Amino acid sequence: MSFLETSLELFQQRYSPELGPEQYAKHTGVDRNGNSMSGALLWAKAETQRIRNALDTGTTNMVDAEIKLAQDLRQRVRDYVQWYRRDERSRKGVSVLEYGPGTVRAFQQKTLPLVTDLRGEASRCVLVDRSNEFLGAIAESASAFGSRIDFIRDDIFSGRRYFFDDEAAFVVMFGRTFGNLAACICDTPPTEVVVQALKKISSCAKRCWVAISIGSDLRKDAAKAYYEAHPEFQLNVFYRMKAELPVDGNFDPEVFEYEADIRGDDEFLQVVHTAVVKRNSSFCLKGGNIRLLRGDRLHLKNSFSFSRAFFEQCAHLAGLASIDVISDNAGSDIHVLEKAT
Image 1: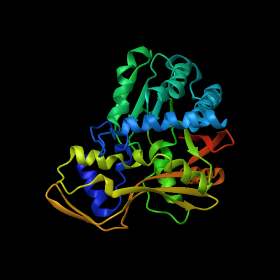
Image 2 (image 1 turned 180 degrees about the vertical axis):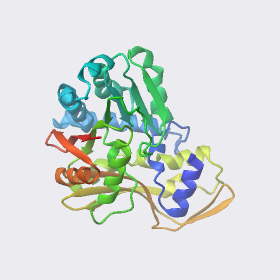
Image 3 (image 1 turned 120 degrees about the vertical axis):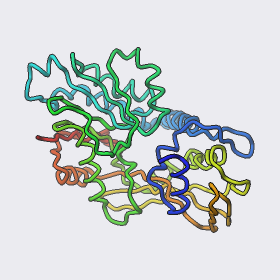
Image 4 (image 1 turned 135 degrees about the horizontal axis):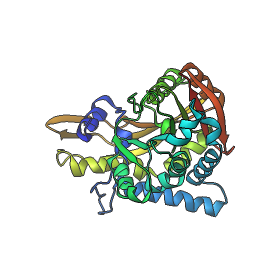
């Protein structure tokens, strides 16, 4: 859907599963003081601040923790990828598919080393993302990476096949992208949602291995503090609407405030990223009247974390075998799964 269609769905249904990727876009929206509210800029600022906070407190930030996990994965990846034609694997190599590659830095530090180690005469790297900004930034530097890279703008949960039946495929999903599953507000573990998502991402190949980064910290207070530290990033889409969409002068991005609504139990945690309406608001969007009341809640996207036992159970139900878990024992895990033919 277009950003306009996604925005209309948000206001009409109070939830739009397509909105999450739109938060990262570069745009010209500004706040009342003329400060840029571009999603790309705010995301970069948030990541920088988290790294600084970690340095000040002596803790490990999520970005560096996952880079370390990806390095551990690289050391073990050839133990997982056992192609049935060993001699051909050595010559052809193993293709790597990444769902949601993110920034150039993330791709270079987490994915590119895997691509380099598994590269062969016929192997390739496939990057799938909804974000034109992320794909475009990596494409600009692609000539320096020394690998064949295919850039595909698509929904990472489309269930699309990307590989031939005889092509060895190693699929990675870093950045906890899997946690941004489209789901309603959950009071019980979202088993069916997770199972269907695993089936879709593993349908990219007849046979493949999948490495998925997820959050495993189920502490509600920690999650709430983590996300509420950067409310401007979560709300930047409203400033983008003001700058890009056919809205009238009554539309005010300042009418929204951010809240991390936390749900879950000992198997899962769901952060319902929520825009709360602070005062009654009426405006026109593409000729249609939108009326919001004080206290209305708009569901922007999700961030899920899962216990190891719950995720492995879902993997089994999806027809995947769990073959390894790499953990920093501080809330970041990489699960390695195998899809048999």
